[in-house]
Amino acid sequence: MPEELVIRHCSPTLAGLKTGNMFTCTYETKAQLCKDIAELNRCLRKKGLSALPLKYKDSKALIYIYRPSKLERDLRSKEACRVLKDCGYKCEGSCKCIARLMQRLRENDEFPHEIGLFLGYPPEDVIGFIEHKTCKLTGFWKVYGDAEKAQKCFESYRKCTRVYGRCWENGSSLEHLTVKKQ
Image (cartoon, rainbow, N blue to C red; front, side):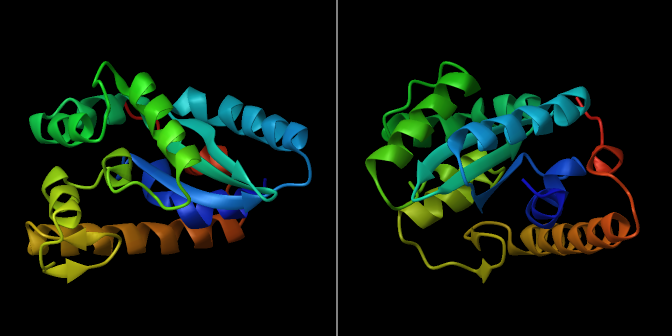
């Protein structure tokens, strides 16, 4: 799996600004992809991140790179837990929630609406999306709550991605660019 793909799609997570990112990558064999992910995890785990394939289909894999400690905290919020319970999750820890998300992804070709919670989106925005409310702003996600705060967040994600892209092009490694955070 090319580092450039990870940098392009996951810079805000690598920088510690975001809980997680997802992206699709192609693969020749599942065995090679698993080897690539194991290698990626050797680099990321030292910095408090994990990478895992959520779904395989037609020689493409949906890869999730995330900060487990941040995800655990995010999913413990009352609003997030309520959304997850409404979608059939038991809220017994982030690992079990990820397993349920993987099951829901396998069962359906569309992304389940609660997926935003796994990416660090505000629960109020995930709820607004599920309830088909009128959004106030569209960026990395549809915003139904605090549009000003979300706009600042979007700007920081864009800037981070630009800076990380330039640094990577100038020779910085993925490991060097990944921030260690608890």
